[in-house]
Image (cartoon, rainbow, N blue to C red):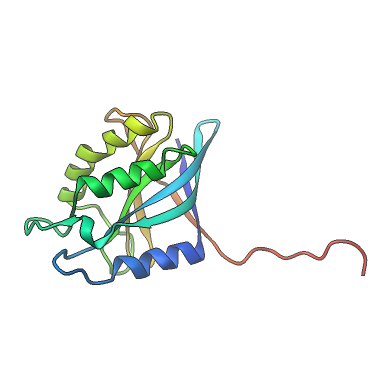
Length: 168
């Protein structure tokens, strides 16, 4: 399966700006993306609809990880994906340049929280993204099981094509 994620340029820029903001005690920020998803044969295309940053008060102090978010943040995220039904993607940044890799903590925590996304919207794929300053990596589960796919292609869309219709 080939998995593609499309995102508007201004939304991606907003996400990157948000994720580098300092927090009182968390070493990194996280947020959630909602996206529409459509299967095309064996391929899957997702189009990001919205970005929801995690509120300052929804972080929990835990010196063992860069950021820990509480159940209130998760509740808000799954509610945002409920209606209309949406793919839910947890997103954070590792900064730097080039293709980022998920840490062991990223993968272990995703194994705990991503299955919960399927409780609210079981027919949508869900996953996580990690950004660098110029690239991204993503993992997607298409069901609540352990089967996962990498997001193969990220497409940034910017200014729309403008056409003049009719005669001049």
